[in-house]
Amino acid sequence: MRNKTFTTFDISKLLEVYPSTVSRWINEGKLKAFNTPGGHNRVLIKDFLAFLKEFNMPIPESLQLEKEIKILVVDDDETVLKVIKRVLETSGYSIYLAKDGFQAGAAINDFEPQLVILDIMLPGIDGFAVCKEIKEKCKKIKILGITGCYTEEIKKEMTASGADDLLEKPFSSEDLINKIESLLNNENSTPDSLSNEKEIKILVVDDDEAVLKVIKNTLEQCSYNLNLAKDGFQAGKAIGDYEPHLVILDIMLPGINGFDVCKMIKEKHKKTLVLGITGHYTEEIRKKMMACGAEDLLAKPFDTHDLVKKVSSLLKSSR
Image (cartoon, rainbow, N blue to C red):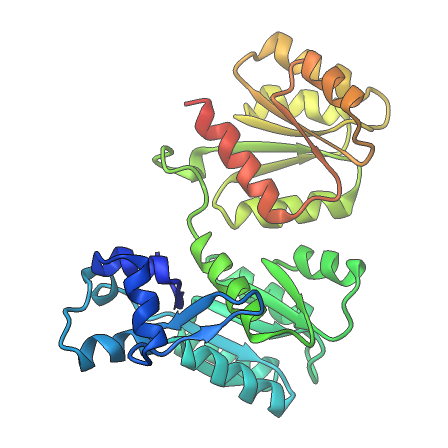
């Protein structure tokens, strides 16, 4: 796992010393550190490496083997570009800057970033369209949208376009770093026990087109095989034809409701996992869904990372 900043505990584990020893180095000015708003010490990787070099200490193997992480930043605001570049280069990332969609498209091929920080309001082609084009070409690239006009509607549209998360401007350097580390560290968040996620089939049943798109974009990025259904009839047909490993099932469906669909699935295919979703979550509804055979119930609206974790957990526990 690649860390851009270290806690005193992280360093103590790497160097096999007591955390109090690391704190003493910081207090004596030997090891450069900064304080978080909560008063905790954090050490940048470049400062940690400088400390090791100055005092002739061996560099831990885990740091030597780190691969370069490339981040493309796309924003038409020169000030924003400069601030993000300074913050991320200080944290050890390799940075490339683009001011519009055209430059971003060229950089995707030439620079080959692992992550793109993408402003939504761009001249010419907007961030939504840029995001879609990036994901169509390379699903593995993580995209962090940024915007000064944050609303839930914009977040939903950006997520539907393939973005992994959205950050509201203005943001602190610490929030930016934490968000990036979270996205990069969750790059392989699907179950380790699955030898080939592309063989994992997931059926999503919901009459809301927007919900279907969000779930489809999110789970396809994890290399799952997706099929969509808008009602109980389509779901019943897909169960037989598609034979999914897991069904993500909305409770409020037109015609036959999710409770009855869940019962039918479990009667015919006991091994098929069912994850219920609902915008009317209560403990009573959860108990009723579980009684129908569902493995779990997730409340709408949900964070896409929570969805991935829930799906991964269910699939992993079934093996």
